[in-house]
Image (tube, rainbow, N blue to C red; front, top):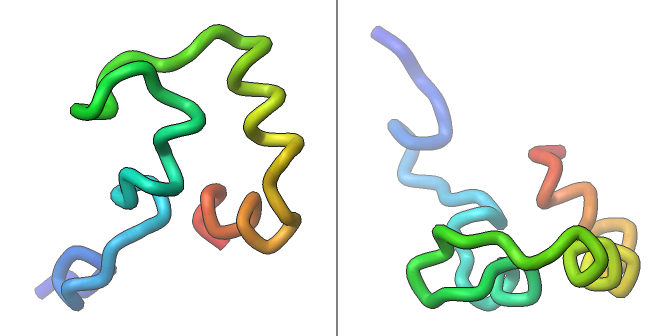
Length: 56
């Protein structure tokens, strides 16, 4: 049997529309913004928020 975040019912920052909205152009979170917009959004985040986005 495998255990993991999905099995435990946990979600990641990548599943949170509020956290992802600066990086995507659509509500379905399917289309990424331009590299410049993505970088701007990333640099505006606190280090702990960046770490959460990276799975840490």
